[in-house]
Length: 250
Image 1 (cartoon, rainbow, N blue to C red):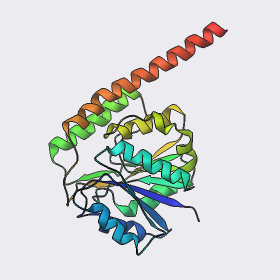
Image 2: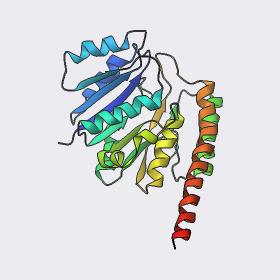
Image 3: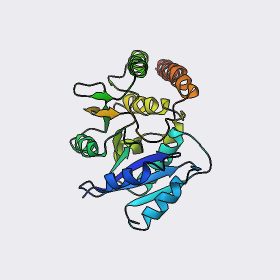
Image 4: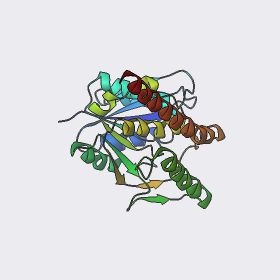
C-alpha cells in the first residue's frame, strides 16, 4: 500500500483540528496526518499532542515558533514527507473548507499518471458554498488574472487542496519557493508547469469555514497581485538569458 501524508498547517484552529484529524484518519487507505503548527496561542498543538498518544504512527506534529506563513509551513511539510518516503503528499486546510472525503479522488488522479492533482472550484462540477458575492468575484478574478499573466492552463491556480506525487515534489527546488501567503499556491503550480509536469483538476465543493477565523489579509492579497507579476518576469528574464547564452555558444 502506498504511503500517504496529509499536511495541515494550523494557527488557532482548536475548534477544528481534532475533528479534521479524525475525518482524515477515518478514510480507507491508511492516510497519515502532519500538523504544522505556528505556535498557536489557543492550544492547537496541545490538542494534537493528546490525539497523537492514541495514534502515534498516524499523527505527526511539527511545532514552529511564531506565525511564519502558509508557504513555509507547507515547505516544511513537503520536506518531512520526502524525508520519510511518502509516495503521495497532500495539502489541505484545517477548517473543513476542503472535504476530507475528496482526498481519495485527488489520489486517484495521481495514481493514474498525474504528477499533481488540484481540488478545483472552477472546472465543470466545481462549486462554492456560503461565500458572499464580493468574495466570489475576487476569487474568480484572481484566477483569471493568474491565468492571463502566467499562461498556465489551470482553472483554479489559487487552490490550496492538492495532491503531489513524491517524484514531482522531488523535482522541485523547494528552497526557491519564496511566497509565504496564498501566492505560494500559485508559485507551486507555476513551478510544476515550468518543468512540464502534469497537473490535473478534480471538481470539488469548497465551503466557507464554519468555525475559527479566516487568515486572509491585505498583505496576502498584495503578495498575490504583485508576486505573480514578479514571478512571471523572473521566468521571462531567466528564459531570455538562457536563450542569449545558447546563441553566444553557438
